[in-house]
Image 1 (spheres, rainbow, N blue to C red):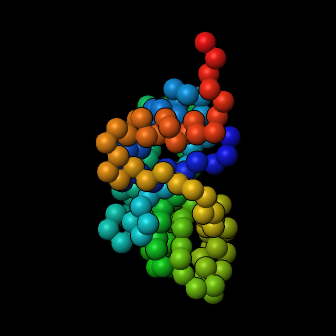
Image 2 (image 1 turned 90 degrees about the horizontal axis):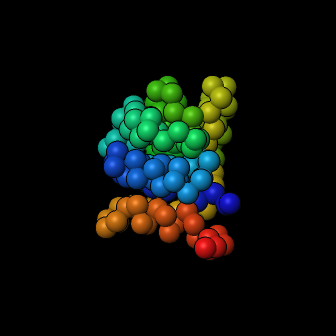
Image 3 (image 1 turned 30 degrees about the vertical axis):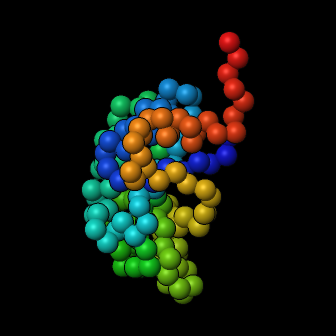
Length: 142
């Protein structure tokens, strides 16, 4: 299955995504914060939110991606707080420097821009996640 990242805004979004992933047999899931979330959501809050959601979902490896917008300082702070993947929409020189620091700690910059499901305003989170994660998959046989 191709990567199908999901933007989560709160603990319930993260729990819904992980729960559905476990139910349908997805073994690796990427959860992303909202674009520029580092400006209003602390790195430790996001890190702990994803960890708390993952606690109840065995069998699903989670990649937590924290979006720092164009602020290299926030990206460095996220790395200091243990996040392993950050998004950074900064200039080439700033990205290069942050990428070097990230690599030295076993972290990296997320450069991918695949289609993504944003759970903001999703009426039924679980149904949205299920449809997203199974899109393009063969239908189950009876």
